Image (cartoon, rainbow, N blue to C red):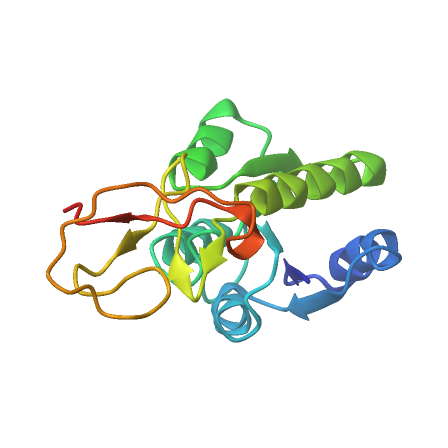
Length: 178
């Protein structure tokens, strides 16, 4: 899902026309509606104009990047402002990319694809609903819980369990780490 936030219907239609063959595109007409739609839909990527009524693209970006529910969503800002300061302002508040209008539709498509692909590669896997974290994919299990769900009988076990038979062939976990 790609959320396009722009107060100009013709810009939203142009972007939809070029991305709809490959993505589900949803729209919002201003920054406030964009935030509400993002919180409801949790899109894979957001493309937002900078200059909009109610909330501008910078405010939208800052609000979404500081919200735990949406902070992971890549945001591309679009603007007619070509100044270096404007671009840096967007990037400093957390925008993942910045395109200056008018933009090439093929360039937009490639940037969208690259950002979505990168986020998919960075997704953190889970085992039994428990979040694997860190570059090693380590899972910290509660001290009184064993890998198979039975309580440990007071045994200290700081071993790492590797097995291709474990769920998804991932590292099953470390216990006793704090």
